[in-house]
Image (cartoon, rainbow, N blue to C red):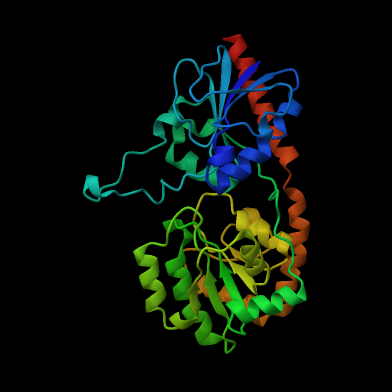
Length: 354
């Protein structure tokens, strides 16, 4: 069987595409040694090292092949059929983009054609499966949850000296929450700021709120305004872009990670919180399963309650950290690659029969 792969996002895509793509594509050729892989690449890298992997140019056709795409395909044509797509997010469904040249109206669904043209759809977790199945019910049977693996370069616990210095520099001598951000509306930062006001009104300790500078975007005007309108705006800090070293120090020195995201992306900051041994607040019990403070992302009071509990109940926070260490064992790239390989074999078998 020949498998052409859109591997470009695994190197140059967003953080979710890079993490998922690299995690799967470094393993799967070894699981299928008698099959040939053709990786679309812009430049050479270690993904091309396995003996059954050949690099091809963007758009180069491979006859009689399955096409596996990490993220949305760049194109679909008769040379690449059947098609297996690994979706890492579908935020356009709940947060449709509106652009000025359409006078504020929603854009045309960017993935409907891809969904309909695909033979199989791979997703890392249940939330994304459900959103896709609900939005495209005729294609729901195509969707398979393959899981997710750990961060290949995990954030580790900070030592006491690092915590003290980071607290002095970024917390102004106070402990702080850290809020990861992608710059997308689904970050839910406006509700987080409202929840922070509720938290501060209830808890005497002045725990600050540090907000990450997005890697590939900027905070919207609405988010900036919401931060300024907050009653405790002086303690809400929009961080500048940080080096990887400083980001890790700030993250691992936080009192807790607050991540009330409504995104369909796999919650990488939750995995980072577990490896950094920091309590985390999140919105999806299918991921947390007792390893974090579960809140309703659409309810400011629920988010605030989670923040209060993490600060005022030390044994809860420490228990969540211990649970996080155990929960990490459920995430393995080897298991994910096995499931992806199983789907590819099934598609290949069906293709031969037809």
